[in-house]
Image (cartoon, rainbow, N blue to C red; front, side, top):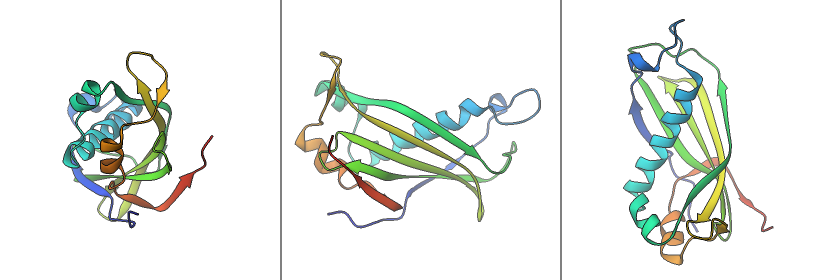
Length: 150
């Protein structure tokens, strides 16, 4: 069983195109940051989108929630983390939490809840064991919990 690890952490950059007319980061950008970071985490752990597609499955999200605590500014030095917040024991459902930090200040969180879908049948499925082995080594958030089997 995986121990709680440090979250996956990467520097992010607010681009000019991420800003709305008021100079605020558009709300949808937070979700884009989170999706990019999860993809990078998966790739680093040997889970490639192309390999999932070749195996006939892929991730699908049911819910995304962003909480905005501090305004982000163009040119800020920001870091974003990603970690598993919860997962079902069969790895059929998952939740990730992402946090955007400016130094020691938590600026926002993005939480996602999802599952895996069979790309041909278009129904929920379980990932193959070879992927479960890799998913089981993803970093877990300090608040990690196991989801009950439905």
